[in-house]
Length: 466
Image 1: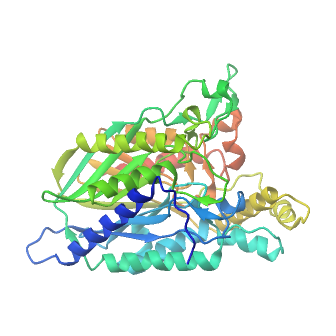
Image 2: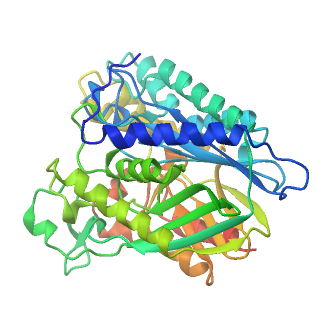
């Protein structure tokens, strides 16, 4: 059992939200679906995925676990009635990559009685949280490196717990008759990380916690200010709420204290007061951070959380509620070819270099893992949930730039389009093709080739089509 040191400031909302979900689930268990109920139904699930003391965080790039500020959760819902069940799962982890992402979808699919292609697993990308890449961790282990990316044994137990929660959820379905959708602007949270100079090159990088006042003072840049909300209803009874917003979800990290950060705090506050599960998905936040409005002062975390929370409430006040007439699920597997600069021999040499820094060895292992996984012909599965003719929810891999989210909304041709990024994280950042010539941080951690952009745009367009 992990020793938790949950911040007193957030403890009431967190525990109340868990109690609210427990009460909701007990009520659902007493209301089985009967003959004559609507054709569609849903069930929600949640499971603790908080790592134990000593476990690596952020793939080993930061201090390992020494305590807990907010517990981490895997939260989601299962949709029944549209063919085999559909599973949506949001995980308070940094990333789930390559084969690990497949295993998560396989295990949740088995638990729900469906196929892996009908399961979407998205990380939220907090950094004081685990990163799963067993291929890369095994590379370090085989090289007898002292560095570790993950706690594999504990991760297997955590996934088993999530699968158990999904399996139990299938026994307490609730009729689904309506959906509601709306949006609200979040003010002073997101800002583009890439601060451009007059020469068209990146002149400064705005991190999640930007210390340089001059860099913070630069314009916001390209963002999507809107938080989008989709809720599921049984008549007048609200069953679950999904929220989508595009930014890196970190205020500060690296201190060894596990945290769901400001987006998790906002989510739990809404769940506690609403007594209905609220599920948050990080959108295309690859080139978006809170850095313009955050210098890393811990006092900023509750401020940012409150801004997200207020938008969550505002989006629900503006919702349009409609009957559920049709639910469909579309998928498309793609292979994003590996960056041509990756060389097996060079990367393996870096992994085995005992004198190399932890960052050098870990990055080399992550790159080599994607190189081997992708060149073996393993595709990444993108998916899209269609709720009637009005609503689309697209699920994308890696750390996509915000422009992909804006493109999906534009290409949706008047539909209400929500986008979740951070599915299979193996490919790293997904910049625009022009971003590589502009410079900056993200292209250095983009594991796929620059020409991935047109392929990804075509795939998004295909998924959004009726």
